Amino acid sequence: MQKMAVLLSGSGRTLDNFHERIQAGTLQARIEVVISNVADALGLKKAEGYGYPAFHAVGSKATNEILERFEVSLIVLAGYLKLYTPPPSLRRNVLNIHPSLIPAFCGAGFYGHHVHEAVKARGCKVSGCTVHFANEVYDEGPIVVQKCVSLADNDTPDEIAARVFAAECEAYPEAINLVDRKGINYFWDRVNR
Picture 1 (cartoon, rainbow, N blue to C red):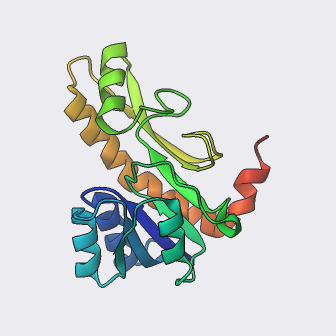
Picture 2 (cartoon, rainbow, N blue to C red):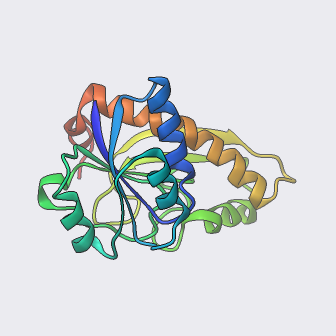
């Protein structure tokens, strides 16, 4: 079972998904702590409501000081909108989800709605999401799970976002369970980095 720290910046929709699946017994994880770089993030209020320790911290150093107080095996970025540098002991243990099929529409500046607008502008027929391990470069670490969604020519960026988020709700728990089964090193060792 993975002992997770959840890092978020916004509404906590991914936190909701994790919580529901943990309660249902379909996610092999336990949430140890929730940290946000935004003081009034709705996700922090939700974390408190669920009974998770919840903290505001700005920057990797402050975040890592909080993490030292908890036993954590996996750090999951759940709409965390800053580049995060983990402590050396957890360097390979950071998972992120990106709202496109990496390597398309990723890297600096490609997050949230910017991705879906770019997908629409390019006339893509498919989009999706990618769960990957994070390293010091945006969206570059080893891929764990990808989910694809079909797009219609008349889909708006908001419709694309909704379809991709539905796929994210399946992909992220699947990826965490896969990491729990196979181990973190499996994913790092199978790619050349």
